[in-house]
Length: 396
Image 1 (tube, helix red, strand yellow):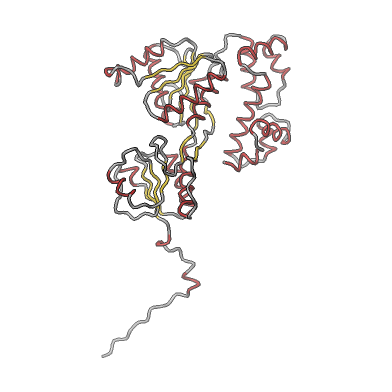
Image 2: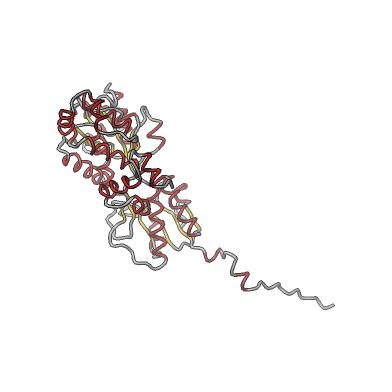
């Protein structure tokens, strides 16, 4: 008996083309050597838009999937990559490096560390500190860049910079209780009150613990600010920690976006792409005004509590309980700026945050920041930042 042959059903070409072919999707390896929720979330957001197949196994297992075929890589390279990663690098697929300090000429997207240090210093300066210190827990280019930005801002303001350097501590004081005791001694030797930046949130938290051990009150004698805005370290330590939000989500997203452009044949940029920080998230560790003049302190407190309202200079003068002329003089003497400069600075910071984090219309943002209308916001924003609110929103 002759077997009947079943003919395969043919799919019309028009319908076949509608189906997403898994073989056509780009396969991207995320091999950073560490896991960062915000960075990974940013990478994943772009991967979703680009319909990539994304493998981040290395961030969880610390094992590089060397036999997994990939079309591109997002990596964090040290000067001497581990053998498995070095093996993958020889495949010469497009890659983007997220590391700051390896000194290679690879396409790179990094955090703007100088801007991070500068933003932390400006926050402490706005609280009225004349003595500001940078706590360097580790040696490295990231740490040096953040300290450079911090120091430049302090010296530009005519204030006193102090370097709390743990990298040259005796070997016996580099771990455990001895390390904390040594750090407590360094902090105790600083003039008070003092504002201190830790290069990372974990470093800033270490400063808080050293102060706690030495009986130094935070923030009354030592105000502390960290960087990266890690929610566990910042919110669940001995004291809620003020931190610079370094925008690690955008770090991941822009790195993935650059890799996407390289995969499309675009030429790599000559210089690293630097991601600016989003702003300072203020918590209890800097919740103090370090100004000995009571009248200026009262004026600042009033400004910080009411800048989102349509306040005027006469309202600030009234809160200070001295004459307008004397307050102007004292404000310039203690803060090196005018009353209106401080009000405008806070309003612009608030407007930037709302432009990044919401889809609110410009007129609504203007009213929420204390401006009389959208025109007032536009004019002031452009004068202070060099771009309109719309341009600023689109640039992010």
